[in-house]
Length: 93
Image (tube, rainbow, N blue to C red; front, side, top):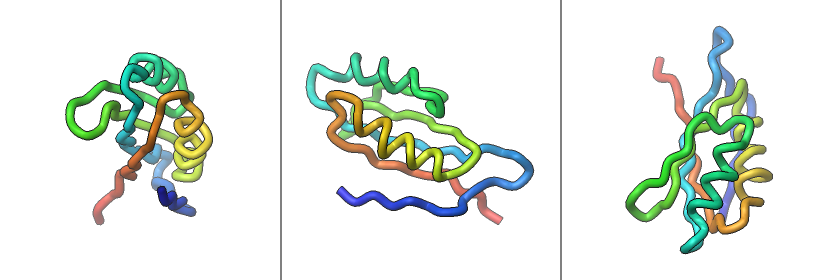
């Protein structure tokens, strides 16, 4: 799995950076995983979903570095999580 860190991405005017994280979880571990994920500082929402992924989490922080740290050192340490796919929200000019 490859991980990329977006450096220097932040919003103007004090708006938070937002990301959607699609999460794959081992069978039988979804309930435990979503409870752990929901308690993380930058996680604003987390839902069980249908399709190839099991959970979608909405993360918000003042910068992309904080979000990447939660994904790399937070989500990946939760028992049962097999992988993540992060989508950063961008602003169109």
